[in-house]
Structures are given as structure tokens and as C-alpha cells.
Length: 193
Image (cartoon, rainbow, N blue to C red; front, side):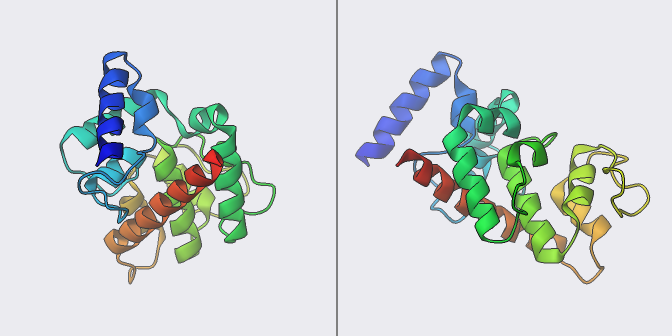
């Protein structure tokens, strides 16, 4: 309770100073509704797709417009190192992959990490998901279906477009969001030690 009070007081101070992008990338406690289970507060604070609810947590995530994944990782090299290592150790990112580069064009870090999970879980090339979600043409030599990247779309819509018809896009998006939240939490906690 004391930690939550300190967090809320700090959030109010930072908000009044116009520093909300720092808050938008990662909560320091579960908070109401977060509970570490990918709930509305946790998902919105990570900027992870899947939660389209309203309320202050969602409003805070919109404050992360200046917090692209690349800038967040450049400004927090320990988080970059720990998150990259964690994703590589789980076989989600190939060795030598620069997470900042992989996440270029994504709205936020949570969205990118969720896409990494969907790519792995459904065996969809990450380059195709990235192209769809960022609205950019896939890299040359990538074997994506025609029209991939022609318009910006959500993770769920990209899953529907790129995966077999038997896949439940909503379930896959929710699962990937939960996994992304857990890994960002773990990487942030490790980067503090």
C-alpha cells in the first residue's frame, strides 16, 4: 500500500511536470486491475495491444507517443540488454538481433514484443507481422503474402490475415500480450539489479 501511494504521488508530480512518457512504458506495481495478469492497467501501461478499454491507464499509454520502442530502449540500455537476452534465451529472437531495429515503426515496446511472440507461437514470419502492424513494405526477400504492409493494422487483424483460418486471433493476441507483459516486467526487474 505504501509503495502504491509513493508511486501515485510520483506519477502526479511527473504528470504535472509533463514527463508522462516515462510512466507510460512500464508500471512499478500491479496497480488496480493489473495484478500481473495482463489486466487493463498492466496492458495499458505497457502499451500492449489487446486492451481497448478507457480510463486513466489507457490515457497514460497514449502519453507514450514520444516513447517509441527504439527511443525507450536507447534511453534504457539495461532494459534493452536484459529484454534482448531474455527473448533470445527463449528462442524468440535470433542471436545477434538488435531489438531496437526489430521494433522500428511499432507504436510501443509491448506491441513489438507481443508480435515477436505471435511470430514464434504461430510460425508467422516476424517481418510479415511487422510490415502489417507498421504499414510498411516487408523487407526484400521476405516471403509475405501479396498486400502485406499495404495498410497499418492491429496485431489481431494481422494474425487473421497471415495465419491459418483455424487460428483464433483474439486468443492468440491475448496470450502474446500476457507473455509480453511478463517479459517486460522480468527484464525491467533484472535491469534494476
